[in-house]
Image (cartoon, rainbow, N blue to C red; front, side, top):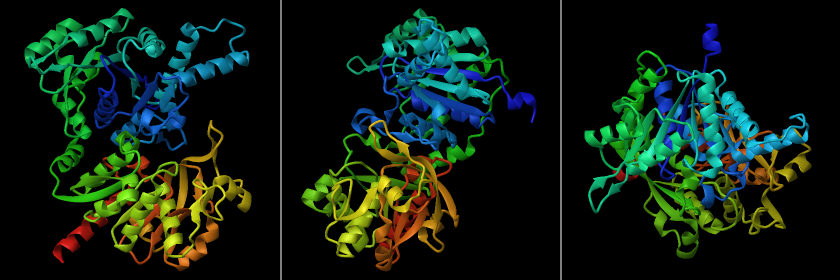
Length: 552
């Protein structure tokens, strides 16, 4: 490999948003990065969050949606999940940072005397720290796509915009470009698309010294040529740099739509590069199988955060990945676990598989265990993730082993039958100080990030992972299955099919078509072009058993 390839001069694509949030900056960033990766480039991606929290780890799922965990244990924004799913690449803690992290590092350095007694100011010290972190994320990459959260005009975002402006001057126009995502609202009463909000948003950017080179125009319907020309003139961008981003039936179609809009032509021109040509044939095939699948299955999704489905973003996408690769539509039947508690399991009677995801706290737990019992007794394919696996073990202990007081210390710290207990208890009892844990800001010990898991020979879990003996999956939890009960549950037919450092990682029923619980979060490693094996096999078994039932 040439020296220039080893140490490329990174080109930076900054993605900002205007008018309002939730326009799809994350999908835009992921799509641009995907097209560049499929063109043969080494591409990195970075999310900057302007909020003051150090990370989203302590934020409610109702406040912020899902917390995505990277392989190195960072609790990050859910957009990092989009990046990994689109690019089929593992990113790390350096690919997401917040205002809180920036100020914390600057203040800590000041306390150590790192600034030699100088007065600490937003410019240059905070901005310099931002630029340092951006460059760190871009090391060794030919391109770095940088997404700035929030909208132009947010007070919290101003230092990041200043960092963008300064990098443009320091590196030059052939290494830094600005992409602005903005809304073209449809006024239904008049039947008109309006460009004025976009013009004002771009004017705000230009006021602080940033002129976008590319406009991503989010719209409910196609933009007429006259409107594109108006945007081009009003925002001072080339006509072919106004990229229309209509609402798409699946987010994975967006890179293909950007290709049709020829977004890579202005990118190549701005960077003074030859024509960029991505190879998207496999991606296109998978998108077609999402939009027009041959088969379909219905999966009961038994959760308690159903009012904000963003809480389960990675898992929903993982089901989409599995379906795309099996040419199968996965219909999610949302089942509120509290409603199952009060009204019974009737919603589960006509599904092809039952999924119980992770979660924290006691609310809705009884309903989840009723769903698990229904899957176990009626031979319905089942997948339990994290809390879902723990509840499968508790349900089995209560209803098969007859341990009436079987419980988790999460729900009853004084339970006489702690089927599930704190990780600290495991370390104390086993004397195993090698178990890698993190202490959360709220004082609890958690297993975060990637751990190795040994799979049992001859198990369905190992078969799902194509016969691999050793796998790596990600964790986010503080309670563990208690090995004290292992011998009793295994004798009764619930075997341990995966373990890590002496900890129980996976369970499965021996007399069931497909009943598996895993302590880790397999959804965090699922990608469109590389679906997670255990989720893929869960959907596959649900489809196979559906066909058997239909034909019998």
